[in-house]
Structures are given as C-alpha cells and as structure tokens.
Length: 71
Image (cartoon, rainbow, N blue to C red; front, side, top):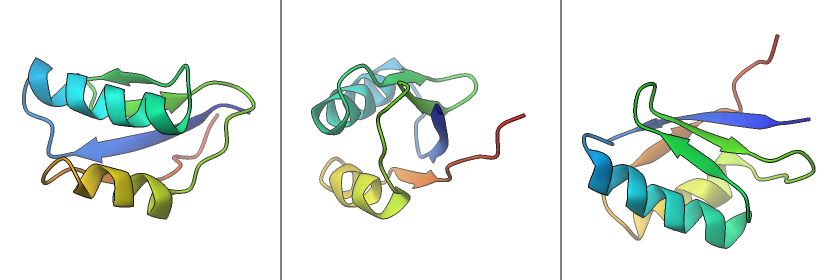
C-alpha cells in the first residue's frame, strides 16, 4: 500500500527539493509535490510520521502529518 503524508512548511521548489532528498534517504523512490504539499512513498516502503519528522527537523521547519487515509 502506498503511504501519503501532508508536508507543512514547504513554500518553494527549493523546499520541495530538500524534503525530496531527505525522504529518498529514508525510502528510495519517495516523491514530493509542492501543490499539494505531499510526500508519497512507493509501494512496500513503510515509514511513520515520527521518523520522517526527525529527518525533516534537520532541514528546517518542515512537518509531516499522516499517513493520510487512502480511498
């Protein structure tokens, strides 16, 4: 199942790029979109918001919420 997290604190392409690199380090194949501000993990990748937020805190004021309900 694919996991999707809402990411707050992203305001530009540079923010999205930083979040993308951090997410890919935790889950290769992760994708980030700016509009809507979301992080999508590939099937089979499992990550919780706590682990993701620890990594994002190293970058700045970014925060993940989720995973969002699917369907």
